[in-house]
Image (cartoon, rainbow, N blue to C red):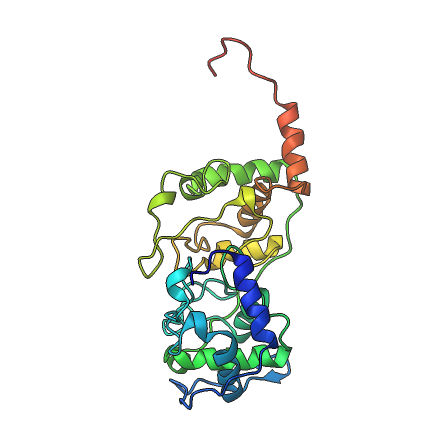
Length: 282
């Protein structure tokens, strides 16, 4: 039966949490990945394999290639762990994420997808899942995780910051995908594809209060500087100064459907701009 709603997915996940675990197939990890460490916890890939079979295999597949039996029914498609390309990272574009990044992704889930938050699982269980996920790609053996980028202190939210962010939104052509009002309806939006040539939609700021990779201004700053690997969203680390990136964050907050400090600055500026006179062509 086709899965039609996020509620159906969440219900299935809840059922999985309450179910008695089935015996996991006796299969060896695909690669001997290095130790997984999150805080003072060490991941156990063998235990992670058991949890993966219980909670994850239906979508991500036995081989971790995103081809589980449910994958045909859901969009966007489940993550292909064999490619080791991850959207939400604290590390530079093209590099592997840290163990903490993967732990955060499992914990948080992904907004506007069928990947729920797995926070109901214990911290240790989530670390074990990360350890097992890393066995699907040889990249974890051949490469080290990238070094997390520095996120400087946020600059003050001012009218000037918001207006400069708007200028950057135009200059960097963010509007071509995200749309002039952040509604994901820019002229390039309909033709976007991900790294596997699957259709992908840009983020709709006007309808979402949570981002793909978090909720805070710092999370959005990080996305600018690391890029969202596997998608058309590039890294702007070579194009933006830290102050520029914060200004862009401040403008994008004005596109969201709640009354942020940034939105207040924006509305105050709009109220101060004289209305155009009849016949004014400028």
